[in-house]
Image (cartoon, rainbow, N blue to C red; front, side, top):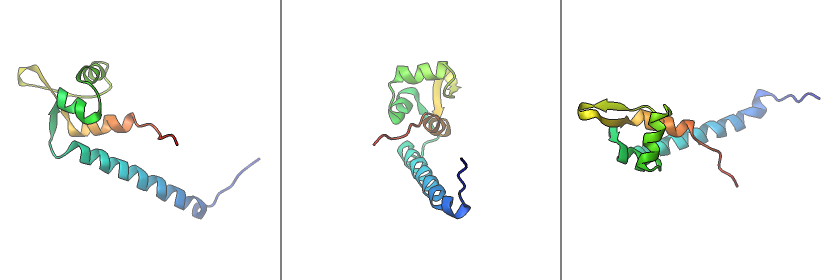
Amino acid sequence: MQITFSIDDLRPLATTLVAEALAQLRADDAKLGERLAYSEPEAAQLIGLESHQLRDERLRGRISASQIVGRRIRYARDDLLAYLARNRTEARP
């Protein structure tokens, strides 16, 4: 059995999916604000984790961070957005 779709049939679906993805990225972006980098407690709160959970994710290599003067850890805004995008799950009805 073979199912064939024309591009015109798929265009509304693709348009809807792209619009939803862009809306979610904008929502994530707005949640993070305008700062360039965040401390571990700030970053954890922004993405809905406890500080120790974010630290564990960093130590496992699942999220990138920078070490600044005094060995303080800072999370770049783009790294937080990338982490959120990688760990997105579909909403269930």
